Image (cartoon, rainbow, N blue to C red):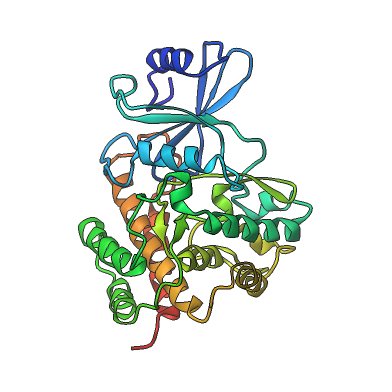
Length: 336
């Protein structure tokens, strides 16, 4: 039995709510998720589905809202954005102790590391598709897909600075002066927001299923809201290491080489959207700082046992990553 899945009750729910399944099912926890838990459910004839649920404990309702995440994926199914087909949402917590939703398994793989990225033949083509998909997402009119009330949209960065500073104060396991200094600098001068878009919130290769030179599935929508498109872009660029570089957090698959450079990615996005990218360094600082806040929360929940005992993570690496991200955020922050 996979920790976090009640085999019998989830079996009954899947048979009753998703067409063309044949039990029994096996469940395998997907490594790499550090907030909500993801499982591959395989039925008796080999059909695969994805089951997503919150952590096992210390759940934050707004941060682990399965209904909201499911709603986004279902709404984007009618757009050019490549998302898995949404199959069902369970809000009956007697089934497996938490809300969960089910979506199709998407062919391809997630390139988390340089070794995994090495198997991609057309890395430059994939680079271009990463920008095209981000542009497609930012082109979606929220109201036309029923997501007009997903968030306020305006003053996105200011509100995020306030929200995540509050979270930092609640979740931090130690004092990091650089985090406080970056927050002070970012709050002092917030660039004007150019557009309101559906912002993914965690747009990077590690949240993409890819096949050859295409994204087959954009995953992990838990941070999605209406917001500033350059917040997504700054975050992507932070995670898009040039050849031979290291990342401030986790792995850097693009560092193996063959991918477009950061500069090219920025140029492509600017050409695709027509947005002014003069303040991209600010958005990179914001993205590093916000991710530092998020990872500190993940670190705290690991220490509290929210992810169970079979996560296979080096927990101390989270604490070290937050320090590196705070330093990177300070490097890109506007001068006082």
